[in-house]
Image (spheres, rainbow, N blue to C red):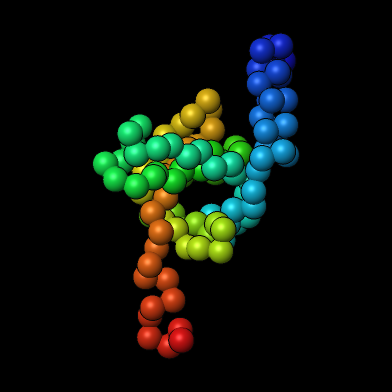
Length: 103
């Protein structure tokens, strides 16, 4: 049986996912995730970094996972666990749709 603390954190995750979560397709599978934005002074040297917190216990992130989010195609560049959930950093995949025959 889970401790009261872990039950509470599960409930908080459920509320966060319901209120702020967005549908994200990762490797062809729809999942719930929230954006985790950070400014340039806290991360990259220029521009803003884009990362997502994924609310799916079955997801095992890997570099180069394909992500569809906000009508764009992305690739996972790195990942770590954040409060027990995968946090993935994204880079826009400009090569999608540029292959011959996809016009």
